[in-house]
Length: 278
Image 1 (cartoon, rainbow, N blue to C red):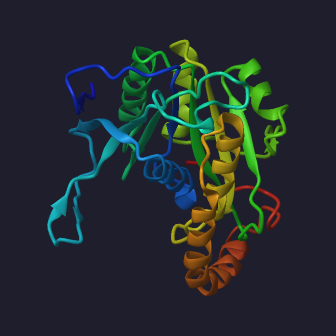
Image 2 (cartoon, helix red, strand yellow; image 1 turned 60 degrees about the vertical axis):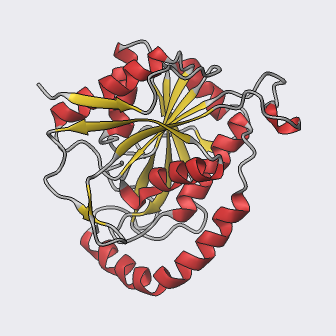
């Protein structure tokens, strides 16, 4: 049995107002991780806790200071209580809901540790009375999408409708188009169903190559999240990052697109998604 050790940043329980939990871990194009890391930085979120397991990958990273760092799985929180100004309320007129943000360098490495990890995450969601969990991921295409689409699925029919019928620019027809959702992004939904936690997954199109950073897809995810919850995210900062990074990557990815399309001739280029999502 996999044990997950949780290190809380403070002994006192943080008080949060109807929090939404948003997950963004590494996957195709890292679109979810890019989006959630941007939220953490933009909203100046504080660390809630970190996770450790003896089933972490047996490797470490080397930091800019030339010292080793362990892989990280962390939760952050943002409380909007006490904020001044008109942005403290969402479009419904109710108080803006607080955030719990799950990010990290890795995903659990096997099936059992993934399920155990998701169980721990959902226990925290229930502890803080999260009203819903939002997972994020990438859909790997054979070409670089000019304007990535965002698809949506859920473990609750009414929650799904709230994302697909409110002008959020979310594609509602996902059956037969998107393959299985792998890793934490998918298992949080299935375990959420078992543990009575409503959850939705937002999946953005991106280029399905391991060297490609899906910043455009991440921006589309953030657009949906901001339209849904009105957090006042400054997407202009993300736009600047897109221009700077994609100029450097474009020449390489053009060549890679051609190679990937040839190797996956069984699907229509640019119209069918690669099966793996994360």
